Image 1: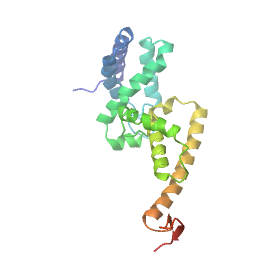
Image 2: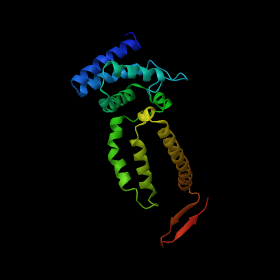
Image 3: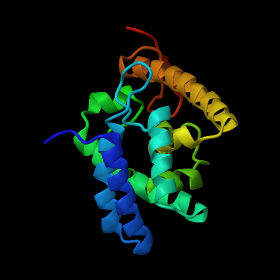
Image 4: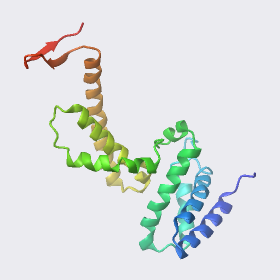
Length: 207
């Protein structure tokens, strides 16, 4: 089958989107998702990587043109983008190799799988007051919160939001690296501090 052009894909997307606006059924979004995935495959980032993340200027211009030609009401745009992002995210992770996803900053976790972690994420926020020495539980909470993040929203962040998120994630990365070193030392039996049978703390130095 011949590869469709950007013009053909945008026209097809507009037609499907108009159907959805008249009759907002999930099946129309599912029909639209593969068109959007193929549309992204026609664009590349500056270094040549396929723009599976949908953040290249060319793709953003094309998708904006789709919304404009379909006459999507401004009040409905955010809701529509969120719903469509869910279906595109699931499909793109089925069709694109994990290595390609990772190279453009996408995880291989599908949005529907991420939603399954939502309960854990909110539970983490509720129970963040766990004792500081309950490291397994706190680490699991941190993982759940990070998995809950929808990285496909990053292109839509304001500059100040990008900067704030970047600073926070760099701090998370630094702290995680520190904890990983200590946990690996503990696993290897170097510098472990543990309680002895009498309830007192004893230090075990490297062997």
